[in-house]
Image 1 (spheres, rainbow over the protein chains, first blue to last red):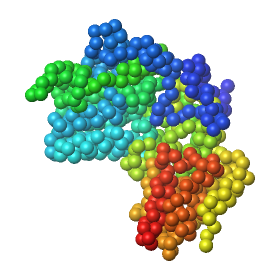
Image 2: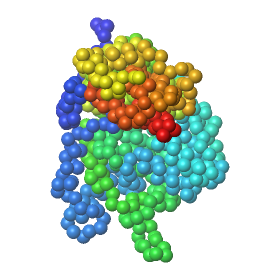
Image 3: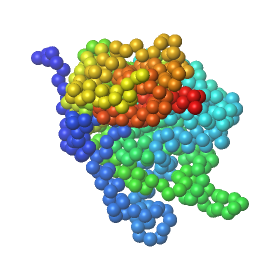
Image 4: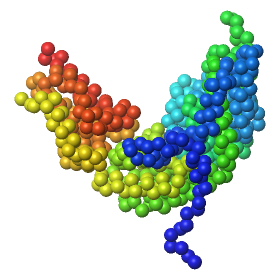
Length: 414
Length: 142
């Protein structure tokens, strides 16, 4: 029998949804419908408890003391590094640098490259769909070194124009820095192909994985990128934490970033020798609780299963696309063939700010504005979009509430 | 002589009190935002633009003796509705009263969240700029 209405595949995520206490709260007197996951996802109890346990029972400074707690904290901290190594499938734990997040990781690489590799006339290749955090650090590096920033085009569907990438790649290209998955559009970029092509010209490749990490199955060795950065808070972990993966040889070749304790071997007033990887890039007492929380998040994702995460997100994206398509005058931004669970849209005759403000009153949390991708919004000639982004704990009912709220707001605003 | 700032604020408050639910308040704001031609196109230029991450605001001020006349606009209609209220309160008021005004009515009618700097809709900067114009006029006359 042919069904007129497409059957919804059961998400089977009720139990894991229950692990997120915050999702049962109300906002503006309405049950919370949290669809701002690309900005930051919520945290399961396992992550909150890991951080809590650390501060209640395990805290001390790492890598310094001979006493019991210092040893314990160090073990936990280094175990977190191993967990993150496995999460991105790096070859060695020393290739995993703890950072404050994706932005911090990009700044580290851009700053160190500006002081070492980059020369006047060298080219840094980025794309039109980059987040400001993968534009501004390179502008600063360009200014400091005399290198030139070159930008690869994006097409109307929100995909990189690969012909343009190949046309702009040349022997002056020293760095290619691209986003794995666009935060505004959800486009998944062919980073493996990009890395392969860039390496032929001897360029280094950084992949901004802020939006890649939440969907799992990250394999830096398969991509063969030189650097990969991510943020814990977008993958169910704590804020202010992330990693920079770098191939050992590439990290060795860079000068240190910040100076301080931990990153040194010997200090005299005449000369300091620097510590080995990964500590060379970890000046000062690190965010130990953050590292432990991030590892708990990676473990939690592994427990759910990366395949299951992707299946749930795919079902949510399909259902949301289908439901929102029924809204009169809706326009979608980012319709790439390969995309993740992000829907950016505008309803004709309404401003994204107004739409966001009204549906917030109905308990629906979305992101509105330019999503820190002003050049991309300028290209489309729009002030911004409304962006709904789905995580593993979202439901079809969340999408029904979103659709109803958007319809109601559009009616009020038109 | 214009009505006193505090009196106009009180008027707006009682108007919004009658509206009750947030839906009705927002519908009223949207109507205000839609119906008023708030700025002369000639003044809707980049020099008068206050940029917010979410919505943009254009503000122009004319001095008339010791009072200020404002015109403004926004690309978002809710922002524009709130601007209409601000202008209703501050227009043609003496510069020194504008500088002193605390504009607490926005909070009291339940629209405080729109004045949060994190909303980044240009309103906070607009109020600063409105007061700045008044302050400049006050300095000129003293």
